[in-house]
Length: 101
Image (cartoon, rainbow, N blue to C red):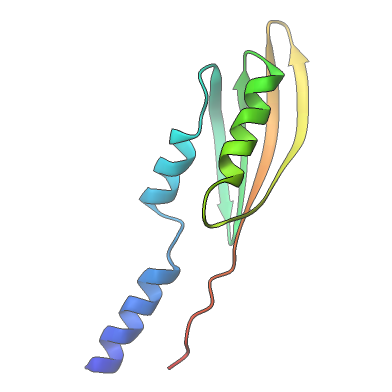
């Protein structure tokens, strides 16, 4: 039973893609930046959305870099469309090492 409890705690410790992560991403959204798509695969989060200016997109990326479990942030695309900017951004999370015992 103790091994099952330790294993369960270990799995929970690895689970950083959950409600807290989504709240952290949302809390880093500056005014005028909106998220329209979020795709999560493994340690990669692919996000896209729109913003009123380029500076706010960069501010969002910098805010995500400050997350304790963020490994890297890459803004792959910013394009002007009429009165706003569309962006695509990737957030890579740090690997979590877990004791196999």
